[in-house]
Image (cartoon, rainbow, N blue to C red):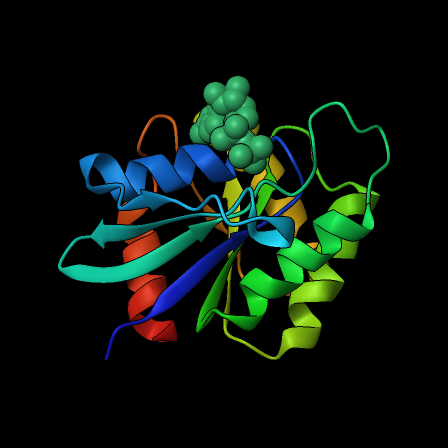
Length: 163
Ligand code: GDP
Ligand code: MG
């Protein structure tokens, strides 16, 4: 069976960096269908010996100061709906924000398996920040650095367990 994992989280937490690292050169397509899926990117992820489809969500236009537009919500909900599991990403450096908590409620309500990722967790600052993510009530966060490539064996173990 082939699985799909959606990467969910507020803007700037490192979702696309994670997507690019998992997909590498195997980026399959950039989906330019109109409407809510316009910013959706889907590719084939490789994580150890695991292969699965992965969906990146843009969340929100960079210029939009509003935290939760209808469009962002629709895109996020569509991605959650189509996924077998969720990578829910927060930024270990900035700590939890109200928008993180809002997205957290959204993914929790889906009832799908959630893998909580505290990204940007390289170094001491990041490790400390990752603990705050426990507060979401979504289980134990995986301290990851999508940019530096740290924590991917822990992510592998979590995906194995979830799927
Ligand atoms: P997205 O909006 O959630 O897709 O986030 P991006 O992937 O575009 O990343 C937002 C910013 O965070 C960029 O400047 C990235 O270089 C940076 N970033 C992503 N992952 C990491 C990480 O693991 N560590 C650090 N320090 N920065 C990161
Ligand atoms: Mg992005």
